[in-house]
Length: 231
Image 1: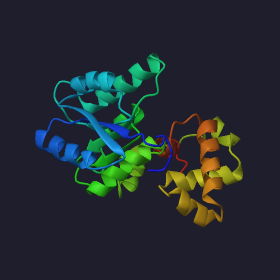
Image 2: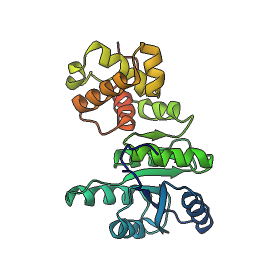
Image 3: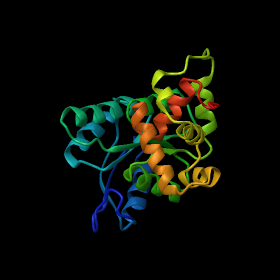
Image 4: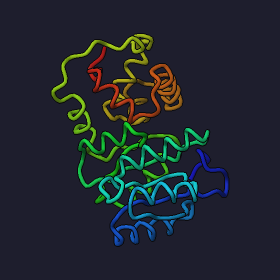
């Protein structure tokens, strides 16, 4: 693990919230096998998840959506909300879902999740997702970007371009559209003939100008406002 977020020798603290005991056991073993990750706790429903998050201060929470007592959407909002109210940095939350995209996953993203991963994803993808969100980036399940686009644009009338979007430079708009379509920094760099460092700087400026938290929110923003084909 590079030094993005975790210092030398520090491990990424992971909490799992899921109502399936067998699934929890598998994830616990998977995370525990990684030298840069530490499994700090688990919970069988959202209410327990909120409490364990307070007790263990995880860096990353793997959050199932459909659970008894309190679902993952409410738990995500509660964990993020409490951290903000207490003046703490909220843990990064990765939603675990059995569907490529549905309303619940989208609501969880709006509630503060940093992305979502399919529950049947390859173990390597889940591990990469943990490291990616901890480094400050967002994760969208492989192959789900198109469904995400369709969900947020389906049945929506055309909307006026947001005022703040007009503050972006022409280059920033180009990069915004590519990022909103799911391209990585390296892919954008190749397309725009820029260095990855330059792309990263542009992305940071775009997020700041638009008041967005991360790339997942950028995707949501783009499709809510019909900006995926912006010039």
